[in-house]
Length: 104
Length: 482
Ligand SMILES: [Zn+2]
Image (cartoon, rainbow over all chains, first blue to last red):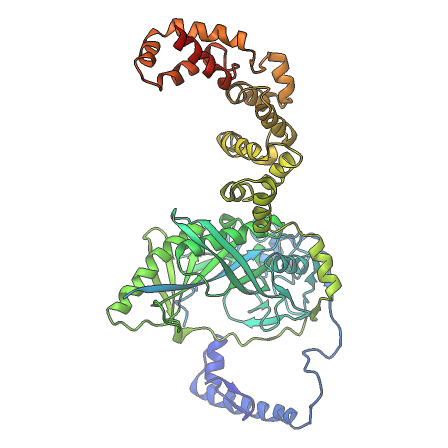
């Protein structure tokens, strides 16, 4: 279950389930192979010696990129709702009912 | 066997700001649905978040108010999940490096159920920043989504599993709300969804160190429902354990109408959020100087102020508790008590008279027609013997409420000064004795309490102005002589 980048193993079906994507058996097998190949490729990053190097999530040594707390006008509702696949009376975005706890 | 409950709370609070956490849409409750959105909070591809400096400052302030350590280095992370309340399919949050760590909030006094609470400190594990999610309304086979709330700054305050009773959980929530309101960090209005609470509760035999199986309760819409759900859930778990049942880790939903908790999901279905560092946001650092600068802007913590009121003004811990519940009231009391010779009486007047009248009229202390200085003056007039307590209550205070004028002016204008002069009081005493032969007879027959009735008659005849301390010996003198 789950991923293990260290050994390059990934369970495509589980990851698809987390992403709410349905896979056929053939797709699951194909993606499993492809994702494992990708992870094996990325695994090369394990090779360089990184002792003494600070782990970071960013390439730039920047911090505190913040904005002042000021409100500005938002988008008009009509075009926003028009971008949604479905709507309720042009007011709400309409989605298939997903009750938390009943999802798979 | 004796059991005890172990309770921990996760509280979500919206942070009071002008704009949302990562975009310039207004942070405002009650707007028309889907009118406060933009490409950032709708999660459009290519849009980039920029963190709101004021929201960060307020979360740090919340941490300082709760005695937390502020992290010198914090970062944002993505919590991945697929639910239509988050258009990006991930929520920006803080996983391993939150803004605030390790605080505490003291509780005590009288519990919600009326029982006294042990004085104790409830630990706070961490306070981290999150963005709020959209509001879903379920309509049968479909759900309607309003994204106005999506991206509103939210903080999650995680407590240690330090509470043992529903009363302690209630007291912790009350104290937390008080702290956040004091510092203007959140309005904490549960009805507007600005404060929300999840409960973790387990039971274990008293004296055992290991925890029992943890059960989470969701859908708690008020402090009262937190209390009620625990009053239901703790005995339910104890019964199950007693019956030899093996409890599962699960999430239960509180049904307020039925007064029960119902299983929502069991642990096997627990989410796997795949947290990873948010690449679109840079880390946030805080130096000691910056932290101290924020600390300097904060008001006194309510429980510190409560204790100070007790020592500085000599009022009871209970009165101090009542007076510090809300900052505007504590400010009002302090403005009146500071420099007053009668701080205890000032507290009495505010608690028994002023709060009652404000309650009846539906006014807040900010809308109070009586200034703190006038309140102090009134207590001084009574304490110094210028007017009697009875005249103050029946005539002066109501006139102050109506006119907002100074009590000394009202007293002078209406001639309400206390009558201390024996010869003037003697006249009232003679009248009272003449008009109440029955009470006089009873007193002479040995019923000592009858003299209190006669003192009351003297007060009535003098329209409350006679000094009752002076009237008593004069009454005795005339009765015993006659
Ligand atoms: Zn926005």
